[in-house]
Length: 152
Image: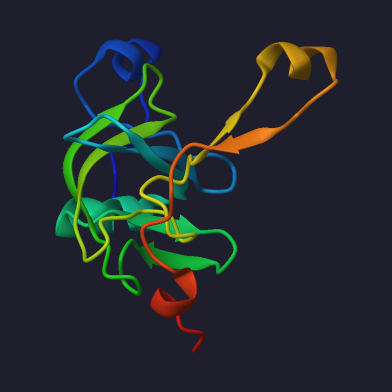
């Protein structure tokens, strides 16, 4: 599958054709959100191949920069993200997918949490002053990664 070429500024920003802007590295940022709760589950990158695979299979598929390969969410953990909606931002250089998370633990983070965003900066004012950068855990893990992810 190939995506339409980027055309005019007006068509990209106000038109009705998907024209994703992949960066020089061939990647586009993708935010993943739980369709039922609105919770942000994770952030990853897609390339043209992973976006095409996502659209074809309806399974969230990303490009793993660390492994340098396609990464179908849930291929190891069983926690699949079923894509229900896809959005682009105004200049089509960021994707937002809304998913239904499925699987035994219903988690998206490889560290065992529902969301990859499981820590919060404790004190914004102290951080602004440079006196504290403490993070608080705002949720508990749903599974033990050592059990779910086995080294091959």
